[in-house]
Length: 259
Ligand SMILES: [Zn+2]
Ligand SMILES: [Zn+2]
Image (cartoon, helix red, strand yellow):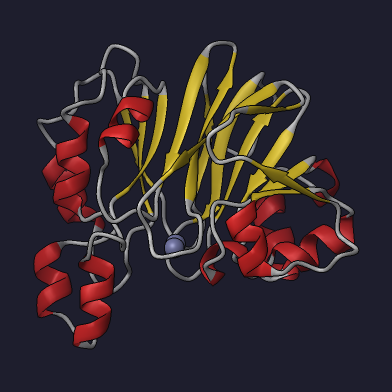
């Protein structure tokens, strides 16, 4: 849906190794998490979700990989949007000093207007990778992509989300029998790479389904995964009252209202 007249909701403008951007929106605030798209591309993708660039109040960055951060500086300069990131990501990106940059501590939560942001450190091959939990009206939305494995800390932090955006990057079989060079296979499938379908499904065993209303499979590899495999794996594992969505590279997923 493109209607976003609600108190609290989330959408993705595109998800995958060719570019990521996620929006967490309340009736007062819109946070753009990551931007791996050109300015023009992002503007079009925002419009498709019923948003104008001037409505974005903050940009928040998970880590410096280009599929998450390549378009941040240009967008923030053009629309004068403040950027929030941790020290490691800031050092790695070396952003233009004319931008309004705020550094957060990866172990301390903070507020962007009415939305509480809890950074969660994750194992991934960037300088200081983190993912986020957003809280509004006591409802948690968890964004959890770009991590090589589930740590006890991640498990503890993400178990009671109302809406969980979870990485289903690749099918192990497809990755290892596919065309990627051996080094890239090792990187993607390694402990500091990306979650495979099996790891994501195993993590779901720890999720509190009493709270979970929406599950979105995120960051699917175009080369090493397919949505039918993900759907088949989740069939039977998810309770009927959990709405399941798959984010894609082209258009992400439609607005989800969180209530
Ligand atoms: Zn990524
Ligand atoms: Zn990454």
